[in-house]
Structure formats: C-alpha cells, structure tokens
Image 1 (tube, rainbow, N blue to C red):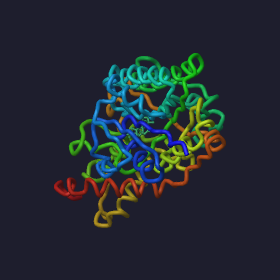
Image 2: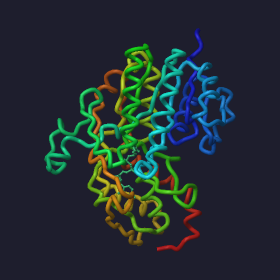
Image 3: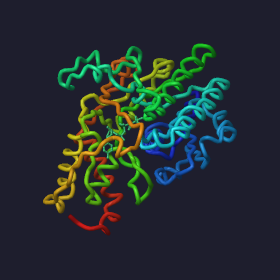
Length: 364
Ligand code: UGA
C-alpha cells in the first residue's frame, strides 16, 4: 500500500494547530511535521513517533523550505488575526498576512505541493444588508448570506485601517487563485467563522499582553471581576464555531483531496449565530452555572465606542453568516456542536487554566 501523504503544519503550536495536530495523530496513521516557535499547547503530543516538531520561526523561509520539500501537503495557519492590531500595527499585519505567506505560495507552486491555507471570514468585510438600514430580522438572506464564489467583498475606506487584515488576506487568496490559474498550483482555502475552544487566545496580564478576541475579553472580565465591555453596544453578530467541528472540516478535505482542491470553503456553524450583547449575557449565565460560588455576583456590562476600545480607524463586520452548501456537497462537512456546548467547553477550559491566577484577585 502506498504511504499516506506526509503533512506539514505551519503554526502547529497555536490554537487551531494544536487541535489539528492532536486529531491527525490520534485518528490517522499519517506522518506530520509541525513547525512553530512555541510548543506549550502541544507538549502532550511531542512524544509521538509520527511527529517531527521543529521549533522555528515559520517566516524563516529558507529553513521552512527544507521541510516543505519533505511533505506532500502544507497546511498554513500563520497569521496575525487579532482585530486590536489591525489599526494599531497595520504594517506588521500586512507583512505577516500577505508578504510572508506569498513567499510560501511561491515555494509550494514551484515544488508542486498542495497548500491548504487558512484565510478568514473577515475578507467578506461588511454585508450589503448593513447599508440598507434594516434591522437584522428584516434583512434578506441575499443581502447577508456569505457565499464563497458569489458574494462581493465589501471593505471600508483606507483610513479605516481595521480592514488592513481583511485586505491582506483577500489579496493572498487572489494570489492563490492566480497561481492555480497561471501555474497550476494545487490549493484549498478555509475561511474560519469565529472558531472557539480550549487553548484559544490569552488572558491579558497572565499569559499575554494587549487585547485578545471577544471570548477571551469576556472571560477576563468574568474571571477577574472587571466590567464586560460591549463595543458599540454589541449589536454586531457572529457565528461561533466549535474547534472540533472546524477540525472535522479539515479532515474532510484530507479525505476528499480532489473535491477540495481549487476551492475556498466557509467553515462556520450557522446555527450558532448570536449578537455580541447576547453572547455577553449568555456567558454570564454559563459562568454562574459552571461556578455556582459566583452565582450571586453582579457582573457589570458596559457599552464602549469602537474608537475608545480599539483606537482610531476601527470599523466592524456587522454580520457573518456563512453559506456552507459547498462544504456539505463537495467534502461532506456538517458542523454538529451547538453554541451552548461550545461555550461551556471553552469556558470550562478557561476556568481550569486561569482560575488560580484569578483567585489572587478580589472576589465580587
Ligand atoms: C476576528 C478576526 O479578525 C477574524 O479574522 C477571525 O476570522 C475572527 O476573529 C475569528 O475568530 O474567526 P472578529 O470576529 O471581529 O474577527 O473578532 P473579535 O475580537 O472576537 O470581535 C468580535 C466582536 O466582539 C466585534 O464586534 C468586537 O467589536 C466585539 N468585542 C470584542 C466586544 O464587544 N467586546 C470586547 O471586549 C471584545
């Protein structure tokens, strides 16, 4: 029997990478090369005989190229994907999300490797519906449902540097498409819709600095008894997709390479759509349920402007509802985890990881 294709994961030590690596090693017989500068999230996997882990900067193209040569499939998770950075260090955001991966695309094209690239749901920008003035209940699906091959990509003005990331990611997708068109590159794209799960992001002042994404911001507020802050009232909406479902999508692609190649796939759980204000309320209720000792606490929820929270040049995606018909039809993917379970699992992991750090601070 021919050996299974060897997989290289760039960014294997991050949130998504750690779950992907775990799944591939525990459910398949594939050989994997993992590259990352950090390994704290994958310590439990480093002993695997089928894993070669290289502690390297993924942007060291020369060193990484040696590993690409050994692999058949390259999965690239490398990104700066935190909105607090898009309008504050836009040059780094463009460099890491466009210039560096562009080099990787060239190498994969030259060597004939299948490149599976993690893009973002943010390339859709704002919905057409957001310009109609209708409330979300009144909007028509044709104006907000995001389809990979039909929906226009609507980004705000250049001075709203929030879009530096979406624009860099979009251009990279265009590069992939063009390389396939002109040079026969084999590629696939995943557009994540707010993946959540254990090991995501960081808590400021404990294991990172700055402002993480919304789940971690709200967990910091709950654990450390700070006010939850709703940016611009928390009216914008997201679908939160559990990491196990996200990894399922990748596994479906690996099982159906011919159907996956040459396509971008939305990976998001439509059933889990919620406004950020409702997410805050749901997280408070879930937290009290998971930690009954805090069930009588009042958790403050405040409203803050986007400018005050993120600085000048912030603008937001109003709504992100993926059309997942293509993933269903071509690779047989279907998300299974509802929001309640996704949140409970994620929040429980945060509590296990950070409760002792929080215990040092004041109770409610
Ligand atoms: C980010 C990235 O930009 C996307 O590329 C990525 O696909 C996505 O996360 C993801 O996790 O998949 P975004 O959803 O805007 O996009 O990131 P968050 O920081 O999680 O913000 C979600 C919403 O919560 C935004 O409306 C934000 O303004 C709001 N928010 C955030 C609050 O109301 N309070 C906070 O404390 C933090």
